[in-house]
Length: 258
Image (tube, rainbow, N blue to C red; front, side):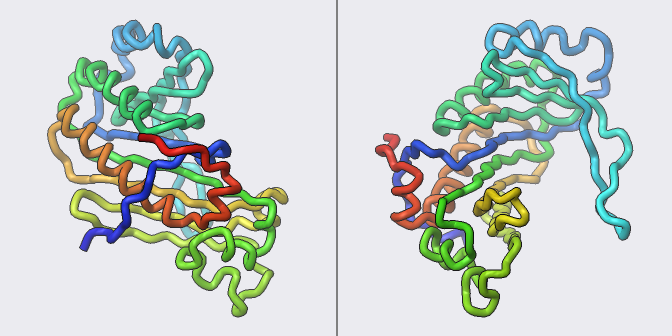
Protein backbone atom coordinates (compact mmCIF):
# COMPACT_ATOMS: atom_id res chain seq x y z
CA UNK A 1 0.00 0.00 0.00
CA UNK A 2 1.46 3.42 -0.93
CA UNK A 3 1.99 6.10 1.68
CA UNK A 4 -1.20 7.84 2.74
CA UNK A 5 -0.02 11.46 2.72
CA UNK A 6 -2.00 14.67 2.66
CA UNK A 7 -0.79 17.05 -0.05
CA UNK A 8 0.94 19.97 1.64
CA UNK A 9 1.45 23.53 0.36
CA UNK A 10 4.97 24.17 -0.93
CA UNK A 11 6.03 26.58 1.77
CA UNK A 12 9.14 28.73 1.53
CA UNK A 13 11.31 29.06 4.67
CA UNK A 14 13.84 31.80 5.38
CA UNK A 15 15.87 29.39 7.55
CA UNK A 16 15.99 26.38 5.24
CA UNK A 17 17.05 23.26 7.20
CA UNK A 18 18.27 21.45 4.06
CA UNK A 19 22.00 20.75 4.17
CA UNK A 20 22.28 18.66 1.00
CA UNK A 21 20.15 17.62 -1.97
CA UNK A 22 21.33 14.96 -4.42
CA UNK A 23 19.82 13.39 -7.50
CA UNK A 24 21.97 10.48 -8.68
CA UNK A 25 21.70 7.99 -11.51
CA UNK A 26 23.81 4.84 -11.67
CA UNK A 27 24.56 3.13 -14.99
CA UNK A 28 26.79 0.32 -16.35
CA UNK A 29 30.50 1.09 -16.06
CA UNK A 30 32.01 3.33 -18.73
CA UNK A 31 35.13 1.32 -19.59
CA UNK A 32 36.74 4.31 -21.35
CA UNK A 33 36.17 6.69 -18.43
CA UNK A 34 39.86 6.94 -17.52
CA UNK A 35 41.14 7.24 -21.08
CA UNK A 36 42.87 10.57 -21.82
CA UNK A 37 40.50 12.97 -23.51
CA UNK A 38 37.35 10.92 -22.96
CA UNK A 39 35.72 13.60 -20.78
CA UNK A 40 37.06 16.54 -22.77
CA UNK A 41 33.79 17.08 -24.69
CA UNK A 42 31.88 16.98 -21.38
CA UNK A 43 33.98 19.76 -19.90
CA UNK A 44 33.64 21.78 -23.10
CA UNK A 45 29.84 21.67 -22.84
CA UNK A 46 29.70 22.31 -19.07
CA UNK A 47 32.41 24.96 -18.87
CA UNK A 48 30.18 28.04 -19.22
CA UNK A 49 27.82 27.05 -16.42
CA UNK A 50 30.21 24.89 -14.35
CA UNK A 51 33.68 26.39 -14.86
CA UNK A 52 35.39 24.69 -11.92
CA UNK A 53 36.52 21.11 -12.58
CA UNK A 54 38.06 19.08 -9.75
CA UNK A 55 39.07 15.43 -9.70
CA UNK A 56 38.24 13.61 -6.47
CA UNK A 57 38.87 10.19 -5.01
CA UNK A 58 35.85 8.09 -4.14
CA UNK A 59 35.99 6.68 -0.63
CA UNK A 60 34.62 3.20 -0.12
CA UNK A 61 33.82 1.82 3.33
CA UNK A 62 33.20 -1.71 4.55
CA UNK A 63 31.32 -2.47 7.76
CA UNK A 64 32.65 -5.64 9.42
CA UNK A 65 33.33 -7.21 12.82
CA UNK A 66 36.14 -4.72 13.41
CA UNK A 67 33.96 -1.71 12.67
CA UNK A 68 34.01 0.60 9.67
CA UNK A 69 37.13 0.10 7.58
CA UNK A 70 38.36 1.71 4.34
CA UNK A 71 37.66 -0.43 1.28
CA UNK A 72 39.85 -0.83 -1.78
CA UNK A 73 40.23 2.06 -4.20
CA UNK A 74 36.72 3.04 -5.26
CA UNK A 75 37.96 4.99 -8.26
CA UNK A 76 38.05 8.64 -9.23
CA UNK A 77 35.29 11.04 -10.11
CA UNK A 78 35.05 14.49 -11.61
CA UNK A 79 33.14 17.33 -9.94
CA UNK A 80 32.10 20.24 -12.17
CA UNK A 81 31.04 23.23 -10.05
CA UNK A 82 29.50 26.58 -10.79
CA UNK A 83 31.44 29.73 -9.93
CA UNK A 84 29.70 30.08 -6.54
CA UNK A 85 30.35 26.40 -5.70
CA UNK A 86 26.64 26.11 -4.96
CA UNK A 87 25.83 23.45 -7.57
CA UNK A 88 27.83 20.47 -8.81
CA UNK A 89 27.58 17.95 -11.61
CA UNK A 90 29.41 14.84 -10.40
CA UNK A 91 30.50 12.17 -12.86
CA UNK A 92 32.10 8.80 -12.14
CA UNK A 93 32.70 5.58 -14.06
CA UNK A 94 29.22 4.30 -13.21
CA UNK A 95 27.12 7.25 -12.05
CA UNK A 96 26.33 10.91 -12.42
CA UNK A 97 24.64 13.27 -10.04
CA UNK A 98 23.37 16.79 -9.52
CA UNK A 99 24.16 18.11 -6.04
CA UNK A 100 23.64 21.30 -4.05
CA UNK A 101 23.97 22.60 -0.51
CA UNK A 102 22.06 25.80 -1.38
CA UNK A 103 18.69 24.45 -2.37
CA UNK A 104 15.93 26.99 -3.09
CA UNK A 105 13.16 25.12 -4.88
CA UNK A 106 12.65 21.94 -6.84
CA UNK A 107 12.31 23.54 -10.27
CA UNK A 108 15.94 24.68 -10.16
CA UNK A 109 17.12 21.13 -9.46
CA UNK A 110 14.81 19.72 -12.12
CA UNK A 111 16.05 22.13 -14.80
CA UNK A 112 19.72 21.50 -14.02
CA UNK A 113 19.10 17.76 -14.24
CA UNK A 114 17.28 18.16 -17.54
CA UNK A 115 20.10 20.28 -18.96
CA UNK A 116 22.84 17.76 -18.13
CA UNK A 117 21.06 14.66 -19.40
CA UNK A 118 22.02 15.23 -23.08
CA UNK A 119 25.67 15.44 -22.01
CA UNK A 120 25.41 12.08 -20.23
CA UNK A 121 23.69 10.48 -23.22
CA UNK A 122 26.50 11.75 -25.47
CA UNK A 123 28.92 9.50 -23.54
CA UNK A 124 27.00 6.44 -24.68
CA UNK A 125 24.96 6.01 -21.50
CA UNK A 126 21.56 4.61 -22.51
CA UNK A 127 20.74 2.42 -19.50
CA UNK A 128 20.23 3.08 -15.82
CA UNK A 129 20.70 0.67 -12.92
CA UNK A 130 19.41 2.95 -10.15
CA UNK A 131 17.95 6.41 -9.70
CA UNK A 132 17.66 8.20 -6.38
CA UNK A 133 16.59 11.56 -4.98
CA UNK A 134 17.84 12.48 -1.50
CA UNK A 135 17.06 15.42 0.80
CA UNK A 136 19.07 15.76 4.04
CA UNK A 137 17.65 18.12 6.68
CA UNK A 138 19.19 19.23 9.96
CA UNK A 139 16.33 20.87 11.85
CA UNK A 140 17.44 23.12 14.70
CA UNK A 141 15.62 25.13 17.36
CA UNK A 142 16.99 27.00 20.42
CA UNK A 143 14.63 25.03 22.67
CA UNK A 144 15.71 21.69 21.22
CA UNK A 145 18.42 20.86 23.75
CA UNK A 146 16.39 18.22 25.58
CA UNK A 147 14.39 15.34 24.09
CA UNK A 148 11.12 16.43 25.71
CA UNK A 149 11.21 19.82 23.98
CA UNK A 150 11.21 18.19 20.55
CA UNK A 151 7.76 16.77 21.22
CA UNK A 152 6.47 20.35 21.04
CA UNK A 153 8.38 21.13 17.83
CA UNK A 154 7.88 18.05 15.65
CA UNK A 155 5.14 15.54 15.02
CA UNK A 156 5.31 13.20 18.07
CA UNK A 157 4.61 10.25 15.75
CA UNK A 158 8.19 10.52 14.51
CA UNK A 159 9.75 10.84 17.96
CA UNK A 160 8.51 7.54 19.37
CA UNK A 161 10.03 6.98 22.81
CA UNK A 162 12.35 9.98 22.52
CA UNK A 163 11.15 12.71 24.84
CA UNK A 164 8.87 10.38 26.75
CA UNK A 165 9.00 9.42 30.42
CA UNK A 166 10.64 6.05 29.64
CA UNK A 167 13.94 7.49 28.39
CA UNK A 168 13.87 10.86 30.08
CA UNK A 169 16.46 13.51 29.25
CA UNK A 170 19.51 11.25 28.95
CA UNK A 171 19.24 10.52 25.21
CA UNK A 172 22.58 11.28 23.49
CA UNK A 173 21.25 10.41 20.07
CA UNK A 174 18.49 8.23 18.66
CA UNK A 175 18.33 7.34 14.96
CA UNK A 176 15.65 5.23 13.30
CA UNK A 177 15.67 3.89 9.74
CA UNK A 178 12.43 3.05 7.97
CA UNK A 179 12.18 1.51 4.49
CA UNK A 180 8.85 1.78 2.73
CA UNK A 181 8.12 -0.09 -0.48
CA UNK A 182 6.15 2.13 -2.83
CA UNK A 183 4.76 1.31 -6.27
CA UNK A 184 7.58 3.17 -8.00
CA UNK A 185 10.53 2.54 -5.67
CA UNK A 186 11.64 2.42 -2.05
CA UNK A 187 11.50 5.40 0.32
CA UNK A 188 14.16 5.37 3.03
CA UNK A 189 13.54 7.62 6.04
CA UNK A 190 16.46 8.11 8.41
CA UNK A 191 15.48 10.34 11.26
CA UNK A 192 16.26 11.04 14.86
CA UNK A 193 17.65 13.29 17.53
CA UNK A 194 21.33 14.24 17.55
CA UNK A 195 21.80 15.65 21.03
CA UNK A 196 24.41 18.12 22.38
CA UNK A 197 26.98 15.45 23.22
CA UNK A 198 26.84 14.01 19.70
CA UNK A 199 26.77 17.33 17.81
CA UNK A 200 29.50 19.51 19.35
CA UNK A 201 26.85 21.22 21.48
CA UNK A 202 24.74 22.13 18.45
CA UNK A 203 21.82 19.65 18.67
CA UNK A 204 19.48 19.02 15.76
CA UNK A 205 16.87 16.64 14.47
CA UNK A 206 18.01 14.69 11.41
CA UNK A 207 15.48 14.04 8.66
CA UNK A 208 17.17 12.24 5.76
CA UNK A 209 14.76 11.26 2.99
CA UNK A 210 16.06 9.05 0.17
CA UNK A 211 13.66 7.81 -2.52
CA UNK A 212 15.16 5.36 -5.04
CA UNK A 213 14.24 3.11 -7.93
CA UNK A 214 16.61 0.15 -8.37
CA UNK A 215 14.87 -1.44 -11.35
CA UNK A 216 17.27 -1.54 -14.36
CA UNK A 217 15.75 0.08 -17.42
CA UNK A 218 16.54 2.27 -20.43
CA UNK A 219 17.50 5.84 -19.63
CA UNK A 220 14.78 8.05 -21.09
CA UNK A 221 15.20 11.74 -20.08
CA UNK A 222 11.50 12.68 -20.07
CA UNK A 223 10.55 9.61 -18.05
CA UNK A 224 13.37 10.26 -15.59
CA UNK A 225 12.34 13.87 -15.04
CA UNK A 226 8.73 12.81 -14.49
CA UNK A 227 9.77 10.22 -11.91
CA UNK A 228 12.08 12.62 -10.08
CA UNK A 229 9.22 15.14 -9.93
CA UNK A 230 6.93 12.51 -8.42
CA UNK A 231 9.58 11.55 -5.86
CA UNK A 232 9.97 15.18 -4.88
CA UNK A 233 6.25 15.51 -4.16
CA UNK A 234 6.35 12.56 -1.77
CA UNK A 235 9.52 13.77 -0.04
CA UNK A 236 8.05 17.24 0.32
CA UNK A 237 4.86 15.90 1.94
CA UNK A 238 6.82 13.73 4.40
CA UNK A 239 8.98 16.72 5.39
CA UNK A 240 5.98 18.98 5.96
CA UNK A 241 4.10 16.42 8.02
CA UNK A 242 6.97 16.32 10.54
CA UNK A 243 6.68 20.03 11.40
CA UNK A 244 4.41 21.65 13.95
CA UNK A 245 3.09 25.21 13.48
CA UNK A 246 5.60 26.48 16.05
CA UNK A 247 8.50 24.95 14.12
CA UNK A 248 7.22 26.46 10.87
CA UNK A 249 7.13 29.84 12.59
CA UNK A 250 10.69 29.36 13.85
CA UNK A 251 11.93 28.41 10.38
CA UNK A 252 10.39 31.59 9.04
CA UNK A 253 7.54 30.49 6.83
CA UNK A 254 7.67 33.03 4.03
CA UNK A 255 4.89 32.39 1.58
CA UNK A 256 3.94 29.55 -0.69
CA UNK A 257 5.61 28.45 -3.95
CA UNK A 258 2.93 28.25 -6.62
